[in-house]
Figure: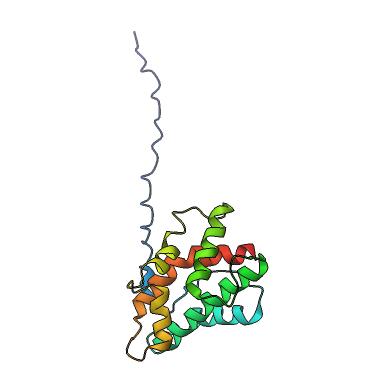
Length: 173
């Protein structure tokens, strides 16, 4: 009697999975040298404001921190003025103080459900707390107070905090 061994089943083994490449964490937002990161894309239909926006993406704060602070302040105000004009807002004019403009535009965005109160918190804080390093008053002081020096990181953090607000303005213009 011969016994036959049953055919052996070949088990196919998968080669060991290759280790996925380690993904790098995003760099700190303040590791850039400009106020606005180069990766930021905002479609600005007004040539002068667009040029200022592009300059803020290129201006090296290590060398031109004062120019960056003043230009940033101008960019914020011109963006808000453009929005007020485009939306034909009557509760505020471009001649009002920047503080009032920010408050009214933020209210408009919330009332019309463009941004909720959580997304508007940073820009509202900028007008509510005059002692905050990122406040509108501080930005005004960069222009008018010879004793206040802007900080590179403060300017970059200010952009990071209000970017959503500025992007929404230009999306709606």
